[in-house]
Each structure stands twice: as C-alpha cells, then as structure tokens.
Image 1 (cartoon, rainbow, N blue to C red):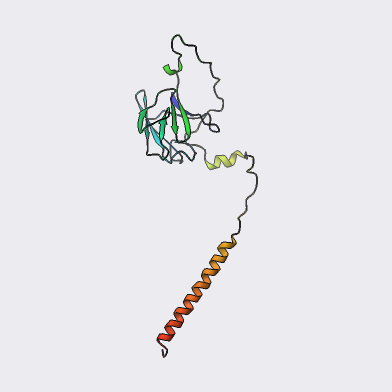
Image 2 (cartoon, rainbow, N blue to C red):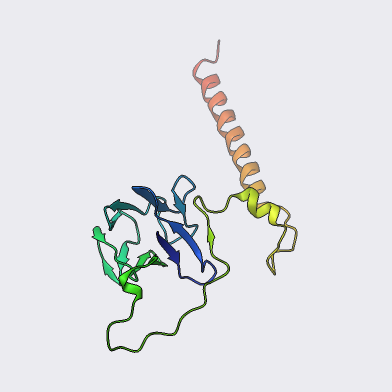
Amino acid sequence: MAKLVIQNQGMTGRACELHTDRTTIGRVEDNTFQIADPSVSSHHCEVHLRGSDIFIRDLNSTNGSFINNDKFTEQVLKPGQVLRLGQVELKLEVEGSAAAAPAPGSTPAPVKKPVDATMLMPRGVSLDQLEKSGERLPGFDKTFSKKTNKVNKVFIIGGIVVALVIAALVFYAFSQVNPGH
C-alpha cells in the first residue's frame, strides 16, 4: 500500500494512504487529505492511481508543487521521492517497493525504527477534536478580552456632527429658495 508521509517537524508522521483512484490534498476540510499549513493552497493537488503509477497533478496552487525540488504541473511520483507542496514535504512510501532495497554491492542503510506517532487522518483535524483534546500549548493559557477603540468612537461622533451640519445647510438653502412656502 502506498502512502504519503509528512516530513515537516510538528506534523511528522501524519500520513495519507493512497487507496482510491483520486485523492485531493489541500488546506481546506473538503480535501481527502487536509494539510492545515498556510503555504498549502486550499485545493493544492490531486493524486491519481493509474495501475502501479502514482501521478500528481498541481491544481494551479499559489506556491507550486515540486518533486525533489523540481517544479511540475503533472508528474509521476516514485517511491522514496519527496513531494513538496508549498513548504510542506511529503515522502512517498510503498510497502515492499524496490526503492527500499539496497543496490547490489552497496552498504545497506541503517534500519530506521518505525515512528509510533503515525496517524492516518483522512480529513485532517476538526476544531471539535482540538477542543476535546484539552491540551493547551504554552503561552496560550491567557484569556482574551476585546479592546475598546477610542478612535472609532471619535470617528463615528465626528461623522454624525458632519451629517447634522450638512442637513442643516440643506434645510437652510431650501428655506431661502422658497421663503413664502
């Protein structure tokens, strides 16, 4: 089974299994795989499964789509390659792929321990899930209150005074044109 795994710190281990013909990736909730990062467009790209090939198609994203730092519009993604959407890097991992096997005569790479924090999140994290977690980040434990803006009050009062002066001038002008009526 093929999956895209986020490599960025803070999102490491989030993954999307590619088990349907079409998977959408973007910042908003209606994508198959939501990545809530400001550098990712609302609807950034589509992943299409065509046989054993995985095609990535950019959806006119603002910050572009890159495979191994080469910008593309539509391209095949191979196991082990890095897909970058804006500033978010995802690696294509395929179980039992030839890309995972070392080349003959080469020293095998050290075996990495699987990340225990891998979570499949097909639609990202909802606001309800965040609120239910109860975990607060340091520095966000303060309560917020609405600030009063005295400039807005002065502006509104000034506008009312100007409107009253204009209304009085218009009334005076009409009373001078028709003094007998």
